[in-house]
Length: 267
Ligand SMILES: [Zn+2]
Image (cartoon, rainbow, N blue to C red; front, side):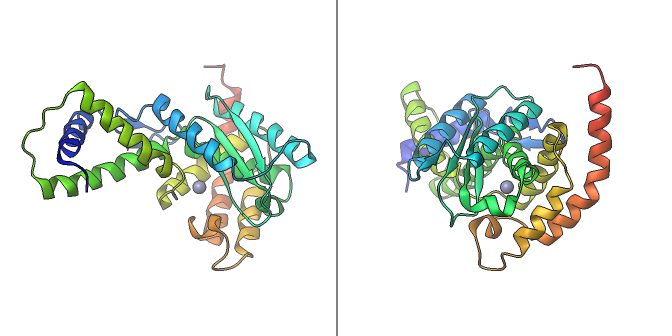
């Protein structure tokens, strides 16, 4: 249970946050709810912290052919995303882990276990695009906002809403507490809607970077063959065969839209 003073401060901060919290995902025009104090800068700090913690658990491969390929794909996808992040790309020596992630602020890691599923450079680009799209669409901040609101509403209902004044000192305390929670939260699974959105935006990034989008459905079909109760990447994501089907349907429209975009004068 949170101390009462801290709880009241969190509620006050939340009330302020709700006044100006609606934003838009650039590529899909979906409006999203992000608490204003979860700024890109703040989220990037959390991302960098979690990145250091997670990558320290593995040997980082830097001189292999695959590591070179990962860095090359990463640079191209990063450029296609148009975001000015402090990008980092790490290949972690973990043959049993079929997973990859991109944390807020552009901190990317692939575990070697996902490389056989990627199968080739286009496959790496599809996974890279998907992970980068989670970061550029601020899915981490959105998920934290939803989680915090739900938690605080419940705690608030239990504790009552009196005395919501707070000082700079308590605000510092609150942000510290959020930081601790956030380090854990940035590595939690995403919702199904976030996955679907990351699939679409990621495919755009891959097309824009010059990769073959047709590798996307093939990749999810390979993922499906891993079967039930398999890797983390499967259990936290929607059904891979449905996903392959949806992506296959999306490809013609996205290719056409990206072609039109490329032919327009630079923005
Ligand atoms: Zn995902």
